[in-house]
Image (cartoon, rainbow, N blue to C red):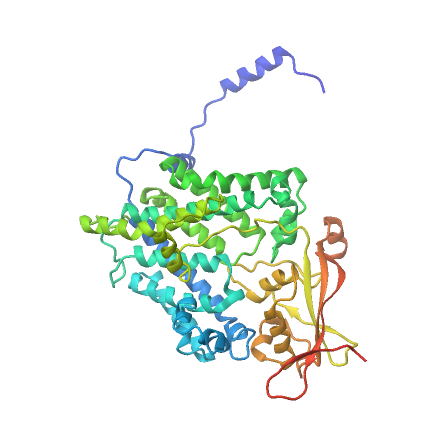
Length: 537
């Protein structure tokens, strides 16, 4: 290729200058103005947050609706009388009964009164109704009190299946929501502007959520984060991969390293944007929204990403929010009485102190807390008032998967097919979130260690043929009668390469590692079902 001559270049630029200038269209000017306005740091009027509060609480009601609806599809199989971990067995436990009244503080749950299957389902229905009430703005503060009490009742008694970070975050958001929601009964309540203390509470939660995730990765000492190789494994070993994650796994190594570095930067330096002046805070909103969008496309994390997006609204003000959504301006706010301002800070102070203490604890500070702080932490812990956050502090680099199989004769084994968990090699990864399939998730955790107690309880229910538990599976290979034996086999899964997928249609390849659980059967006799090992003939 020949280089252009100086005369040719000069003629080219003269031609460009002679072209008539095109005036930007109105749509282009509007789009550019919107983006510039979003990042503009100065505003003639002081920032307001009544619209932000209104939209956020509608989103919070939607999050509760998702959480209760998702749990309702599984609650009897997980916690019913013939479920994997029945609530009835927990509330009638002799160990808890020996603790006296202390057990109510340890497990704050309404199900101490009644843990029947019907009550579990009624609790879900009540949660759905209250969620809709919050979404339409009907008595939001009272509705949020009921939602928080109900969800805490499930989580505190739910053990492993309700121990995810998004469950704790929803409870923390619900508790703060009770304290900051309008107290009116009719829709549109909220005559006063949210106080500075209320806005500070929500932005502090955004700060802790992201900073906790970043610090946990740096403090873990995991070499995949230190060497910027975490994204080389992340998509392949995610608990419930998506199709987008499958394709992202095959991106170049340089891109994976850049992705890892970007995540660390946004989760360590980015959180300070939540506390920064307006232009930087708005920039932080878009950065975090983009991060959550990528995570949604490449992984299934229940309603965690939706929670993070909703919390990000508090990084905006009403002026910025109206540029995003076609919202009408509310009526002028009534003056806030001085006692409301003072009371807001008095309510916010314990949460701000506990949140700061939780962050400082991550930096190995000396444990010489004042007695009043220890007392406050002890009271807040059972209520999940302030929680630590941080996913994937240590990246898993392999993908062991448990396959459950049943048999009538101990020779021919048939596989139970999960609804969402990785299984069949030609089965494409699917988008599951914001639904949270709790058994499928816990199967991923179980494969990383020794068999947990709940897995033995699951095997027992399969041998009994519990209909509520079998509904948690996509395919029951024994529709006529339960199997005589059940075992668990461990496999190592890997994503296929692009060429293999095009040629065979397989998304996965696997290698059998051996038995995770040997064949189990029901012990004969007795009124209570028990397991026994099956050694074969």
